[in-house]
Image (cartoon, rainbow, N blue to C red; front, side, top):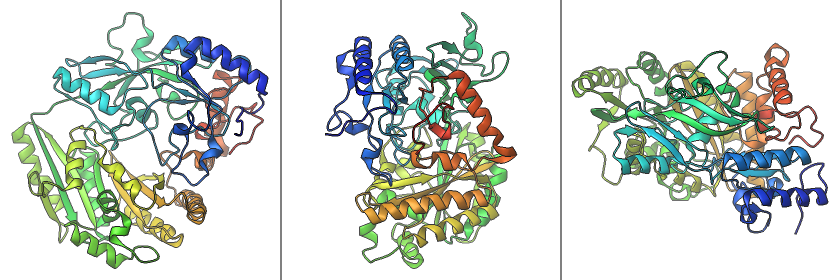
Length: 523
C-alpha cells in the first residue's frame, strides 16, 4: 500500500504530528487508511485518476477549540490542511484535496444549527449543516420560513455560499443573503465579522457591514481562513406562490428570450433565480443516455428535437415563480405571461398542468419554494458518472446567450461530448452551466474531457466570459483568466495569503492562490 505524505514532511514528523492531533480530536477522528477510511474523500468523477489526490489523513474536529489545536500543530510541522465542510460538490472535485498528501480538515462534526430566528428571518449554522438538515429543523419547529437551497439537497449551507453558489427562490444569491461570519485565521485567532465584532451586539445577522472595511467576501472561495459559523437570511413564507414553466420550440429562441427576461429580472418583476434548461439538461435528469441514443457519436440535433417531443418539452424550458400577495401575484402574472409567450410556439404550464410523475416539474417546483431534494443528481448517470462543470458568466443579453451556446456546443461536440447545459438568470447576469459528461473509467474519454475542459476555459477567456468557480484541476488556469492590470488581483491575493497564513498551511492552491514559500508541485 503506497504511503502518502505531505510535501516536505518526513514520515517520523508526520507520525508525531498525527499523535499530537489524536490527543486533541480523539483517536477515532484521525483517519489514515487509504484503502478504506480515505476512499470517501476521493473524487471519482473528474478527468484525473482519483488516487492522484489521495489525502495523507483526514482529521474531523468537533469544535472551534479543537480546530485551533489542530492549527497549532499544523503550523509547527508545516502540514497543508484542505478544509471541507459538507456536501459533495462533485464536478468541481468533491471533498478531495488539491494534491495528494494534504490532510483533509473535515468539519462535518461541527453540524449544529445554532439559531433560527423566525421574527427577523435568519439562521446561524456551523459548517457541517446540510440543506436537508436545516429544512427539516424549520419544518419540525413550524417556522414560517423558507430556505434557499442548491439542487442536490445534501449540499452544505455554508459551503455552497462560500463557493458563490446559487439557488432558485428570490434569495438565490447565497453569499448576498449571508450575514455575519465567525472564522479562524491560520494562527488560530478567532474573528467575528460585521456587527459580530462588537461584544453583546444584537444585530450580527441583521446588518452585513458593521463598521470599517467589509471583509467577509475575502474569506470566500479562497484560503485565508476557516469559517466556523455563518449567518443567513431566510425568506418569510409568502402568502402566494405561483410556479410556472414555459417551453420554446427552437434553439434560436434563446436570443429573444434573454432580451425579454433581462428587464423582468432587472426590475425584479420575476424575483427568483430563473432556470432556462436546454432539452439536453432536462433529458439527462430524467433518462439515461443509452435509453435515448444507442448509436456511436454525439446525439444529433434531429434526435434532440425528437426527445423534446417525447418528453413534451421544448428545446429550451424556463422554470420561474412569482411570490407575494395573491392579488399582486395574479396581476404580475398577466404581464409575465404576455412577455414570455410573445415568442411563437411558446407554451405555458402551471401547477397541475404536468403529469403527476413529471420528475422535471416536480423537483423544480420544490426548489423554487426552498424544499431540498436529490432529483437533479440523477444526471450523473447520463454517461458513466464522470462530469466536469463550467460556469462562465455574462451579461444577460440574447447575443451573449446565443454566442455562448453555439461556441461551447461546437467545442464539446468536436471533442465527442453532448452539449449539456442550462442558463440561470440572476439580477443582471446569466450563469451558463456547461457539463462535460463522460465515463471516468474510459481512459480515452477522460483524456478528451480534460482537453475539452482546458480549451473551454481558453475560449471563454478569449471572449471575455469569466468563470464563476473551478474544478480542482483547472483552478490555476481559471485564476490566470483574471490577469488584467499586470495580474494585480492575483498579486493582492498573494500578499493577503502571505500576511494571514505565513506558513502556507491553509488549502494551498485553492482558487489558484499559493503561498510564496510553497516549494512543491502546483498541479
